[in-house]
Image (cartoon, rainbow, N blue to C red; front, side, top):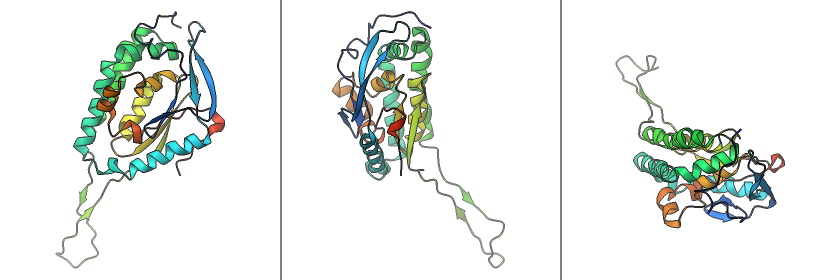
Length: 242
């Protein structure tokens, strides 16, 4: 377990204010009871965070459904790739801040957070940005056509989004694990994320809560406000994507 570190880059985020939920592009106070989260190295309380109630979860899923059938569906693969790349660049730009929060959040060493997990989270978005323009259907020439001899038949496959996906982020590498779920789903699907209450801060900060408004808009326009609502809650909260 790491020894305590000082919040050199994340002090603005750890300002004592209750951290809200990001649902449908708005920061809201969840219906669940706020809870404290502490530094596993020292036991010191670091932040108080909102938790989601059932209505908050329903709102997050509804926002993801709306995104799936809204503007996001009309974006070209190249436009989606550019958006994912911008998110990766934004993570890199705030790597020091995110690394501190990951260490406070989970207890791993700062070097592991700064030089492994946060860069790896950014690379998840770059990797799947490349796939956005390469996932296509297949044209098939069937051997059995049930047609008169000499008549050519061609079959096509079309890949379609699965739909709204609920992603639960585990405790051990919350920022990286969130990227592993957000980046691939964002090529086509809409996603609602729920992070573990024991390790909520790094994913919360990855929602750009402590970045400037201009940075937030530039990095996540068309993405986070509608397609990746974040809802924290304990087990009784529940989630349904239907």
